[in-house]
Structures are given as C-alpha cells and as structure tokens.
Amino acid sequence: MRLLFAGSPAAAVPSLEALLGSRHEVVAVLTRPDARVGRGRTLQPSAVGAVAQERGLPVLTPRTLRDPEVVAQIADLGVDAAPVVAYGVLLPADVLDVPTHGWVNLHFSVLPAWRGAAPVQRAVMAGDEVTGASTFRIEEGLDTGPVYGTLTETIRPTDTAGDLLGRLSVAGAHLLVQTLDALEDGVLEPVPQPHDGVSHAPKLTPEDARVRWTHPAHAVDRRVRGCTPAPGAWTTLPDGRRLGLGPVRAVPEVTDLRPGEVRADKHEVLVGTGAGAVRLGDVTAPGKRPMPAADWARGARPEPGTLLGGSAPGSASAEDAR
Image (cartoon, rainbow, N blue to C red; front, side):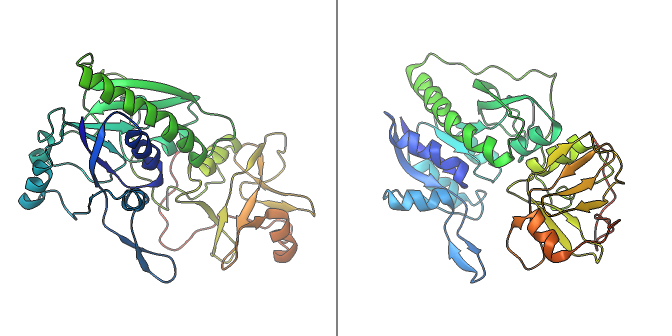
C-alpha cells in the first residue's frame, strides 16, 4: 500500500523505520512544524521529521490540517492508508476519509483504557500492572474508533514512563505493520470499542508533576516514575525554589518522619510521606545538573526537621491520592 506516515516524537520513529522496511511504500511524512529548542532557541525538526529528511522522504509540516490547500495536497498523494503515531494534532473530518483505509492510529494503551495524550504516564501513575498498545481507525471522537489489534505489556515495578514507552514503541511498530498487512490482504475488520472500561489520559502539566508528600510512599513513587522523563517530577525547597526529582524508592518501614520531612546522612536522603518514606534518587537543584541526593545534601546541608513541598507560586490545590 501507499502510505502517508503521520508522527512527531521519538516514540514514533520505530514505527516509521518498521514501515520503511515493510512491503508498503511510505510516500510522504506528516509531522509537526520545526520548533525552537535549547538555550540557543534554534529551529529543529521533530524526531520523525529528522529521520524522514535523512531518508529523502517528502515532509509535510502544516500548522493546521483545516486549510483546504493542505487537504488537497494530502489527497493528491493518492495514499491507501495513513498510519499515525503520536502526531499531536487532531484530524478534522475533511481529511479522515481521504485514504482508502483511513487513518490507522497506534495508541499506547489497550483501548478503551487511557484515551488521550498521556496513556503511558497515566498508567504508571495509576499503578496499573499491565498496559499495552492498540491500532484503531481514527474517527472524530478522541481515541474512540474501532480497534484492529492489541498487544499487552507488563509494567515493571521500577518502570519510568520513558522506560515503558520505549518498549511499547518498538512492540507497537510491529503491531502497526501487521495491521496494515492484514488490511491490504482484506482479512481484518475493526471491532467497536466496548462502552465499559473507559478511562482518560489528559496531557500532563507541570502541576501534575508536583509531588504531594501527604500521599503514601507508593503513590509518590508512582507519580515520580510516571513523570519521568517529562514533564519531570518536582517539589519545593523551604525557600520556595523547585527541586527536581528523579525516581525514588519507597521505604514503608520508616514511619517516624512527617510528610515532606527530610532526613539526610552521607549515604542517603529520606523524605517522609503520608504513609512511610521514600529514598531520593537523583535530584536537580536550582541551576544545577542532576546529582545523587546524598551529594546534594552534603552541599545543601538541610537542617533536621527541614520540610519539602511548601507552597509554590502559582500552584494549584493538591489532588487526591489514588
């Protein structure tokens, strides 16, 4: 089949590579416009856009798909299907019926669970033991279209969202190729999603990544892992500045620390929670690079009874622990 591949971040690159090695022909790539990144604010293509350029593929970077000229440009490609992996833009009705087999999305959850922009992060934060990936035909609703195929993946106790997404992006690439093969062979029909089991995964905000020390240790652990690497978990120092947090380890047997209270020695830094404590891993102090928490404590020298997590400018109210 002739394909238009739509995707933007690094998690979509394995799918593009798999399709380029398949029996199908990727005739063009649709991705987000170049963005300014880094301290120099230089324009750089998306991860998918960079790979497409290296492979000599035509790259489309429209700011909107509602422009009739863009719709006509896509129609002129004469594609049979348009596989989508984390493109990052909702598709308007005008383009949904352009490919013969529609737009086939690879979504990183077992639908109808975790519809939305952050399914992997939300699954980790919720403490799910199993997640997966699904291919489905896009319709106007958000991740509501009928499903072609699924796979499952165990969430390991120490998985960050980045770890889990890395595995799903590779396994999902194979599922996407298999789905397109079966569509071309005429042996696959999509199945409507069930009405039960629907959950939603809105994009994470920086406030979502703020650690609430009144939550139990296991919930703090899950929140930090779910926000790693992005948007990055954080708390506040007593002076109100942010302290970035890498993955922590729950220490439920430590029960004599108040929520947010720090206990540091030359080997470790413990912080109390609503039930138990956590051992900090790497932390990022203001203006510093990530470092082991014990190294940070040797320089910061937190006094006994120091509390993390006071109010921060612009912060919202704490959300309920799961």
